[in-house]
Length: 190
Image 1: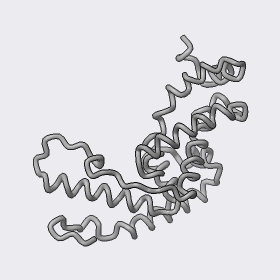
Image 2: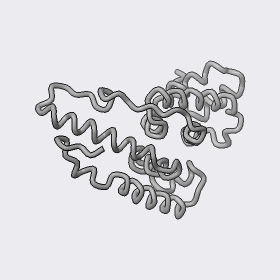
Image 3: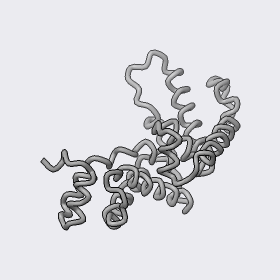
């Protein structure tokens, strides 16, 4: 069964001419970085486009993957670079519709649910306003759960540089969100 093959073997098959085997890698990883891409681009649609483009690039440049056993990390670098390209090209940012913020099932307190959805939108907006390198570091650390050494390998930067990005990112996010938790939904300040 080819879908149980290790990544390195699947890469070898693809490079040997079995192009259809790349579908195994697509199936394994097309959703793996979705949360990261959504948080970097701002919308699920843009994230899907970035992931699709990343998979196309991975296929085109598969021969450049120096460590096929570590294909997932190599693909993540491509996804990360595509997200950065998307952001730096000034792609049109769209906001998520209110109903996309959180799926609500039989809320006990509609006002509370509305304030939670608003808080999510504000945090997402503040995160999108951070410099790309800081946003990326925060997402990798706190959303994807990577360790500093893993982040350093994926981003090809030093651990001290990542620590500084995380520090600055947390400070900037805190500044952007200052007073947000004390926000009163009955008297919103916009």
